[in-house]
Length: 394
Ligand SMILES: Cc1ncc(COP(=O)(O)O)c(C=O)c1O
Image (cartoon, rainbow, N blue to C red):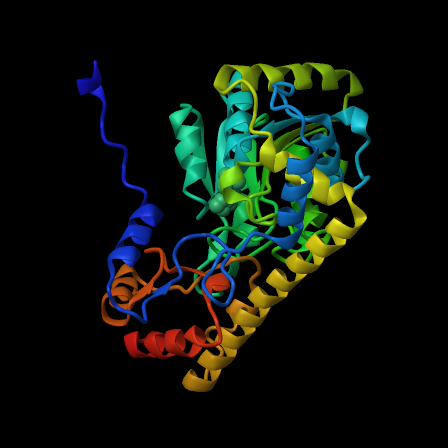
């Protein structure tokens, strides 16, 4: 039987991490992997999480199973974090999942049951796991134009044109904020126009929000998503706590199903439990409990929000500093888009050859589409990167 198996296509980012580790050059710079790093190149455990771990250790009396969809208190704090009080609880079904990836997987599984003929519309470009999971589930996938490589901004008109070709019941996968890999995001009036199109064409949004708080703020980053949730009959949200709580390996995420019919909630909730049972039974609990402790405790919550604010402003400072450095060295505003983008990533707009040159000549590692992790830059590495960019040519 095993001889029928095939080697999975290599994961570019994991290969890049390995190549970086093997590179003996002391001044090498890793801008590849999508993990937040402080100015020492370290991914710290957030202070509030450390305190929550101590609290949990002291208070937890059992490791027995929780429910199939996880702990209800986790659902409540996450619904509040993502949606505020915009949607009444009677409209929302929720399930804890292993990370945001788990939530996406369950969302796509659910779509396959509800409407196997649905096409999943993905932004071009998008996070590679989106097509990978959808295709693995044998769902039909189509792309909508999202990014204008010349202006390095959202090509909204083209996006609407492509989505106007979607058929009733199709699903549109959207990045709630901090688009990965482009860093280019919809503004509020674009979210409003998009909501109108989705409503008119009866399309269902699947919103992937993996970076809430990394863009413009915890509330600001959900404005588009909240608008869609308030104005459309059905919305699916896949949220990750990996980045904004810094608990990557704890595998903490949540899927929300929002329906305009209150009577639908029980069926949706049962379906999420069914999907969890048939994939992994009970979702991981440790990370979701830490998130719950932080969000329920006023002091810890303030502390977490403050640390998150510093992470966010650090990334914006890095963006501005790199744009300034490149402006002063080139005399042009070619890289001004870096200041406009939000989140951990931007595409520098380089060909694969230039990306290789940056790696082999300068020890600077980035994804082959020229996606850089802005959070991984520092005061020391920004001038080095700028110099290398100039040397490979714009
Ligand atoms: C766009 C996007 N969605 C979802 C995720 C899921 O993250 P995780 O499964 O680690 O929570 C990521 C992580 O890199 C991401 O970039």
